[in-house]
Image (tube, rainbow, N blue to C red; front, side, top):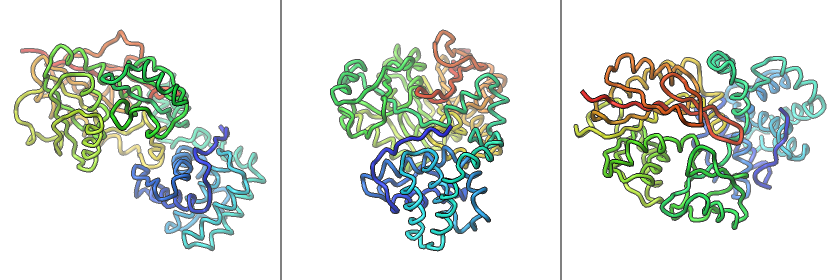
Length: 445
């Protein structure tokens, strides 16, 4: 559990730790996430370190918070969530990074001055030095709580154990490690074997993924600017599990040049782009978030592909022309419990009470989009969740109230396990994220 990791950048100093505290404070106070982490708030050489401090701290948060509560004589006031964040960042460095202890302690405590809270330097220094002295005993003390030792909130640990009694420990293990960097090779420019050779020439090591035919996983993550042909659309970053959506829609799209396709809830656009790379289709992509839709536009522009982008709510129908679609991809909003390793702030921000409203939204999306599908058409339901309420149970309920829905999810694939009418993938260390897919066909009258 205490395996230490080297920082992604050689930079250090009070500035980067203060920046990490500012980014983490909204997460700790339930007022923001790491989605908008501005790594440009520090000098270029420190951006990797900033990301590691923020994401790593969130990944280990239940354990770090337990240690902080033992180290502090009394908790910080709410207005000092940035100082609390600094303490967690300091604990993370001492236990999980290869930063010299004197730098982890001194630079972290000193960063309080940059937050205009010089009083906190002595508190932080005392707590972190005590952790140095009593590390083994303090860790053993807090790890008596299973939720702390496994670094997951109680509600989620219970949900995973109940839903997946054979797999929950593997899910937990994967969640507590950073996900690998996986690429999607654009077949219009290279096959993935040829692109892997290009990577090797650049000194980048990777391996072909087992399940997605366009996927390569890098041994070590890198900046996209060093990927051969990235700016020209030769390659994109996308997890292997997410790439399976194109393969699942292939039987419906490949035989129908010019097929009308809807990508509902399309942002940030990875699946949208993959479909356009693979198939000759007329694609409409909608999303209710204008800012995220702009990201989709940027992605398509880089790849040199086109779609009709619309700012629209997929639970409503005013935007629809009335002409049915041949295929619909519904990548539904969900808990994100299959991608915690990539969004570790989920451990702090997601609540048990969030699941029922999300399931209600997914139901509304399914019911609203199904009439837009032509007879004989295909709808692919996808989530990056591992919770049955959002996945197998959601589709089971939809089938019960939708007589013309017919399950066509394949059973002859090597990925995931059968879960109701769909297939469930679990996050795997050094491999794909957690995903659920169910493929449905509308019966002809």
